[in-house]
Length: 277
Picture 1 (cartoon, rainbow, N blue to C red):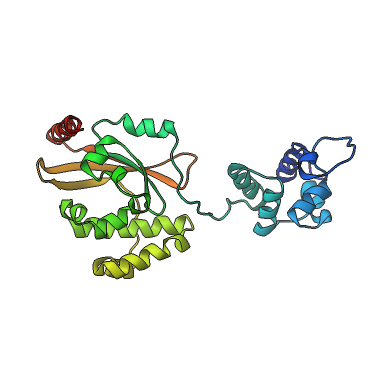
Picture 2 (tube, rainbow, N blue to C red):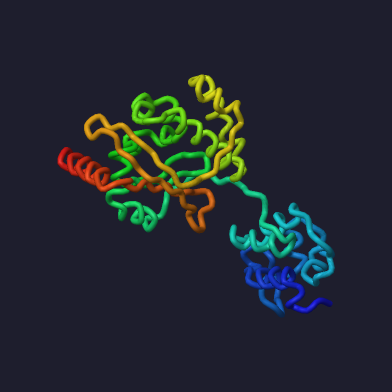
C-alpha cells in the first residue's frame, strides 16, 4: 500500500472524511473512529464504496472529474478544498464554474476608498461593476445612481451617450473592451451568462454587433485612457488591472493620473463634487 507521502489524495480524503459529523447527515450508531465511514462518503457521493475505498488506499487509478466533483459535494468541500482535490487527483485545477456577482467585503471597499484621487472599480468576469470609489463616481460613472442591472461596462459603453462622448478614442476603447470581455467570460466559463447581454447589445448597437462578430480577443494590460470632461478638459489616466486574491470572479481596475496637471484636475473635480453634495 502506498505511503502517506505517496498517497496525498487518499490522505486528504481521509482527513476530510474524519472531520465530518455523522449525526448531521442522519448516520447513527456507535463508532470507534471519528467522522464518516468510507461507505457513507460513497453513498453521499453516489459512487461505489469499493471505488472510494481504493481511492483512499491509493490504488484506484486516476479518478474522473465527475467522480471528484461528486466526492467534493459529498464531503462538503469548500472551493479551495475542491481545487486542491482536483490538483491531487488529476494534476490540474477543476474547470471554471462561473458564480454570479456578489457584494465586495468592507475591507475591499476600503482599499478602493483609500485611493482618493485614483478612480478605481471592481468588476466581475461579465464586466458588471460591483464596487467603486468616489473618484470613479465623479470621473467615470456614478454607478450608485444606476439600477444594479445597468452597471455593466459594455452596456454603458454602447448605449450611454454621455459615456460614449467622454471617450477620446471611443472606437479603440470599445474594441479593447469587447475583446477583453470575451476573454474574461470564456475564462470564467460564463458564456451562457453573457448570451442575453450580447444578444441585446447586438440589436441596440450596430458597432457592438460588428466588433463581436470580429471575434477579437484582448488581454488585460497597463495602458493610457483619455477622457473628455465638459468642465476640466482632457484628462489622461494610466490604468492597470489586478486580480482580487481569493475571488477569481472579480478584477480591479485602477486609473492613476498620468501627470501632475491631471491630478490637480481630478482634485478640483472631487472638491466641486463635495461642495455640491
